Image 1 (cartoon, rainbow, N blue to C red):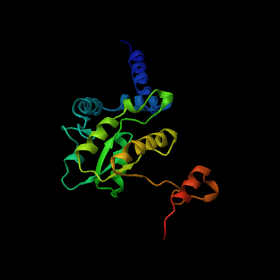
Image 2: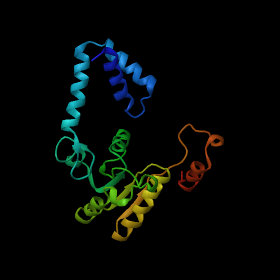
Image 3: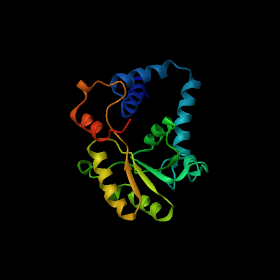
Image 4: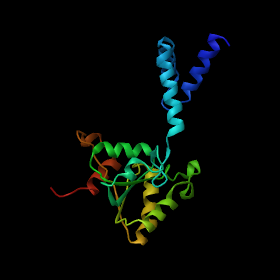
Length: 198
């Protein structure tokens, strides 16, 4: 196998990664070529290890290395609240705020008719089962504020409210440090609707 073939194979594989265009793939490939063999081996082992050891939590579908993730196992969490998110990375984003101490439920995506993703392709059935078996008082819907996220939030609200569980949605509006004149109409409208007393 020629050096050019090996390099092209690496470039092709790196180019398949999300957010990595041809230039980025080239920079990473050349970095790896110049790195020592030990550094390349550590990267390869880390990739293989994460693929072998990390799976989905059997309760909330977050990433886990045991049957349940560390959040579901934490006895200090507020077990009366579930924050519903689209993807496991959304759990990490909310956790970084340090503002939420309840449980999570990861849908594994959002409703998107264009992509042929309906409620049956998501972990909604499992969420409803949790609401039936666990003592949940509030479901906080934290899907992205885009068309698919809003569609998913509306569907979940209509499905959950008849069960007698309080349903709330993350507030959305103007970012801190933003200027009103540069805000789009939807964002500004949401900020007005989600206003609160001061």
